[in-house]
Image 1 (cartoon, rainbow, N blue to C red):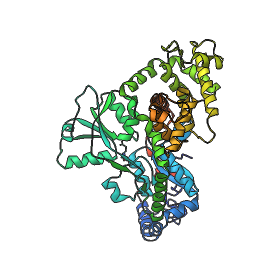
Image 2 (spheres, rainbow, N blue to C red):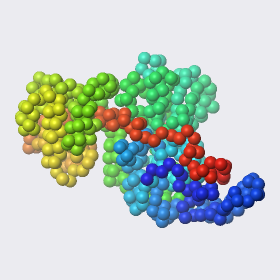
Image 3 (cartoon, helix red, strand yellow):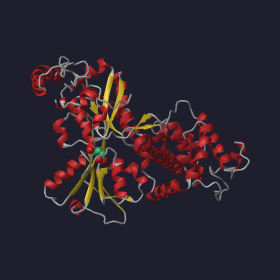
Image 4 (cartoon, rainbow, N blue to C red):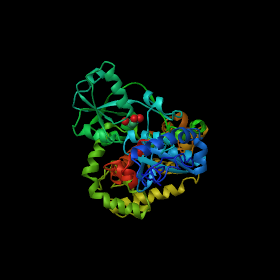
Length: 511
Ligand code: GLU
């Protein structure tokens, strides 16, 4: 499904758009003695007016539907697309798969190894559109059609705490600023440089994941980097020493860019309708919440401590956690995140209220779960896992994943009765009691008499339950992401490795 080799390259090097075989008649280029340049000339003369012209008038939506496949150029990063144990995930992946479903076609996500490569694929018609956390910019807009915005972001200047904090563009001058090569930020800085800030020192890094830039600033390779706000907020926890110096400009739109040389009007309309519908029924908000929402609310200090403990304490227990997770068919990152939230991975932990151990079980819960020694980490983890599974089973059937897990965690913390009360309040106030995001807003109301007096189980520390769940989600994501780089494919030394042998010897691609 995730082919790196561009699909439209035919054996003889002709590029065509699916069933639009513009150059199909050009064969056996290398079988004669005629000089190569002459062949190229003939190809150009034949192909441009006849072939490419007919390609450009082809309707891309119709073609995608008749081929039954949507090819999307993307990039691997936690905010766009990644493989989690071979399962594709990510904000762009979720959006693109919903769109493919809407069209009734298969999705083929093709991660590129640089931002420039994404646009090259659009130029060559090797992808139908690009979905890669791409910002709408003037230069891109002039070259590619784009659909309507589905997210907003802000470029941010990132620096390492302890170093001088720049506060304006002029304070960036004379200090190296890293950006992703071919990014909107490279474009913006180059424009600023030309427009009077001649002291700007821009260094373009040839990567697709802005985490690479954070690594470089964190390791003192360069003092500053520019990345998008949504990317920084989800990755910051891995880099507790890094902070935002200032926002470089105001909100910008994130859009899908379409391939060149086709009639994209119908496809554009269809994408716009799709985005409008996702906005209207709350799906878009839900996806944003799912992929970016957890990052808010956990303090920088909390994240820092977590990052330290992940290195120092977790290794001693990770095998145990994995074992229990497997026994109870839970994601081990989730179990580890809960154990961290409960005890900071301390099997001896004891609270003033008498809960104890790695999973901080109460005496009644421990008894119910068959735990005889709460300070034994294996028993404690098993007790917690079992308890969570029990709660999950008892939740109403029409609450689906991932919300089901967040609800189960909330109930683990506050109890099933209070969670139910919060769902009742949600329903009364016009929210959807099946969505964690809606119920999360109402849980704190259980602390206010004008609300808790109207529900069955009364007062409860609802805000604490929300923090509990959101922290676990945050830790879960950090644990999950720090493993991801190992699972991604490494870029080829040169793109040539991915081209058919015949093409590696020619420069027909320049067509
Ligand atoms: N949004 C950026 C762009 O469109 C990519 C992400 C980044 O550089 O932080 O180029």
